[in-house]
Length: 72
Image (cartoon, rainbow, N blue to C red; front, side, top):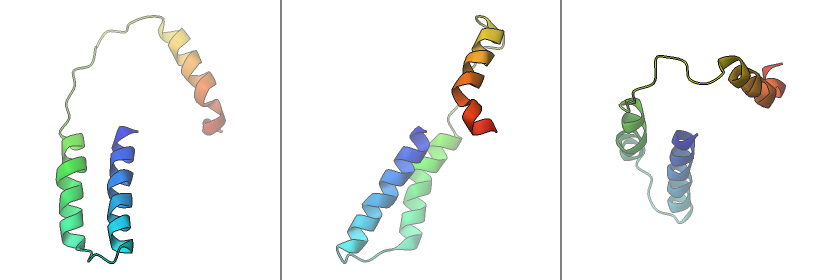
């Protein structure tokens, strides 16, 4: 979700500049978006546990209950 928020914020800021009659440089915009948001997100590595932690069935049920309206 953080990635979308950062990307949308950057897009809205750019649109705000355009609405103020400032020139839009698409190549520069795409380069900035890639370097500042997309590349760091793609290069982000985190170690995750390989052994289950907690009651996995209970966690699965909790997640299902939370998101079931989006599944069907």
